[in-house]
Amino acid sequence: MMADTSQWDHVVTDTLGRIGKDAPREEVVAFLRHAATELRRRDPIMIVHSGNGHIGGDFSIADILVTLVLHELNLDPADPLASDRDRLILSKGHTAGALYIAMALAGYFPTEELMTFMDPGSRLNGHPNRNYIPGIETNTGALGHGLPVGVGTALAAKMDGSDRRTVVLLGDGELQEGSNWEALMAGAQFELDHLYAVVDRNRLQMGSRTEDAVGLEPLAEKFTAFGWRVVEIDAHDYDAILDAFAAEPEPGRPTLILAHSHKGHPISFMSDQVGWHHHVPTPDEVDGILAELDELEAAK
Ligand SMILES: Cc1ncc(C[n+]2csc(CCOP(=O)(O)OP(=O)(O)O)c2C)c(N)n1
Image 1 (tube, protein in one colour):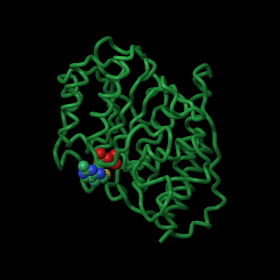
Image 2 (cartoon, rainbow, N blue to C red):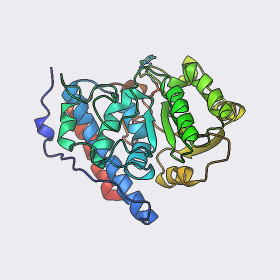
Image 3 (cartoon, helix red, strand yellow):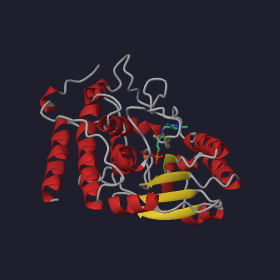
Image 4 (cartoon, helix red, strand yellow):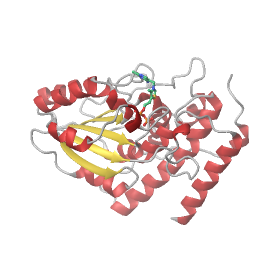
């Protein structure tokens, strides 16, 4: 049963389009900050509508996602299957809601369609499906498959002699799937220097801290030992995200961006709270999220 969300009809999500590579850095950052705020406004309303979703992990990757989809990657919403586009794979497919909003903001499909999230017959499934939305590169949701597919995608680009990049967004809990470590070895073996893995290091998985389930640390050292160049960033700092992708690839080595984030960021009552992994917010909580986003936007 889809819930009534008409009380938030005043929250309108408009297409923003993409901001070009030649725009000044301050303009890019202001644009991306606004886009991420719009994403975080729309997300809880979609989740209340469907009664499902992964709001904590949506919020932790919002800043990176808008940076990639609305600016950094070589993508064209009007030509979503252009052969030399960069490839983005959302391996943490449970955060499909965030990807859909970023894609709608960029212009891949009308923003009105967002409110069909998880309706019967909707193109916007609970996990991304490439058969429905052109521009989604591969179906994900069963954790542990995005990076192996990304290795193949990047290897294909290398065999084509193309400079196109492959970027895979992973959860940190997801790293407990052994397939990731095989893919890390293969990425180094094939010297895929246009392959980027971004790990959303929010330190929480479903129901616990990662370190209390199957501990991951020392993570940066493990990636280095597997032959990857490691770049550590604050996942909510646009300059850091932009700089990480602007750096020239290191010849022969894939790049691992270890993005230190906060699940539920930047909302005071959600941030770093494990209970918000797939909590469906109450109407009061949605109002609280919207009020905090308004306040933060006014303060900038
Ligand atoms: C193979 C597989 N096992 C279990 C799940 C169920 N599941 C969905 S989200 C999740 C936790 C993922 O944690 P993490 O990768 O850290 O994501 P985040 O905390 O950033 O949302 C799990 C276990 C799944 N989607 N796929």
